[in-house]
View 1 (cartoon, one colour):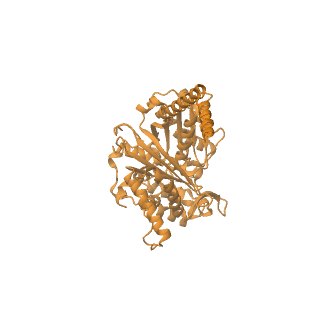
View 2 (cartoon, one colour):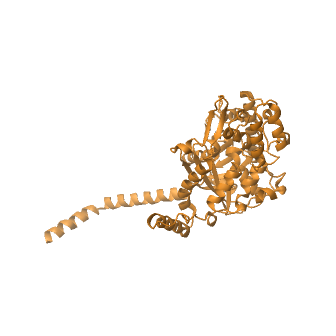
View 3 (cartoon, one colour):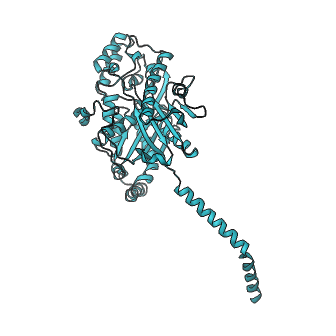
Length: 453
């Protein structure tokens, strides 16, 4: 026994020699220093500002003009005209929404040049507005991300912008296409990932959809719907990971969750570009779209919930799931839907159409006023695809609804099928009198009909 103890004490003495202790302390100090560095360094993604495109009044498409136009153009038979008229009158889209100039021509003129002109008009305007507002030299932009689902020219859209504004040669530019209406949040996700890797950078994100080349001239009702819903628009968003920009930024990105359920055939085919039997190419919106969107949202919520909801709400949800699984509760009772209003103050639901907004409100158990920004955006600007959630945030700013500390949930849906969520925290006092895309008409909203219907 004594021999064993002596051997143990000799071993410990050898291990705890001055050299060992010195190395141990040095390693501990380095670990603590590294932990403090990673803890205190700037890790935030800040939204400095954003701008939404405001089309000129000359491009407005009142319902009467739209109907008269499709009748005179001769592209559609009587049944197709009547269908589009009926849907448009119930769509929730108002008389102020706009389409590009070529769509106003009879017959509508679609070409590569015309589409390029629409894209340049929208993007050049908003980029110039955003950079000049903050006196930012284009050469200070480090990252450029653009998204436009159905127009992917050569050179790319990012190249158009680089050429126009003279961005520097080592800018990191990425052009996304085919991502649908959820691409705006997807672009933010990509920019966020790049900003996590490249320090002290400014990122410019551009979101739009080209309307010019995508008019459908056939008879399939599922393909006629995009003719009615989609309108001209776009948004430019300026992001930063520089610590000094936090004091001038409007928002800080809290969470971003992306969901893709394309492995399901019904979801994959719910928004699908294809030719009809006569060879007319269009985007088909299936009858299953709302069901698919709800399924994608439910999956997205299951990942987002633990990030934002209070523990009490999470426990109640978990308990309802357990009861449903183990004790076979009646189907009519259903699983508890978490109340996201306990964690989030504002909601920007993709303005895909009145039925989409209604469906998401029902799924989230929201009140009509929670979907106001979405309904009013649909009424004033129509479905502007990936930029719609930015028009909605712009609406909340113009109304003076956003207060420092508030959190906003942007919810976007897109082909594939995808549901993407972004949670932004307001970190500054937003001045509602600052000019934006809503300034000229914000006093008319909310409109009574669109609030109640």
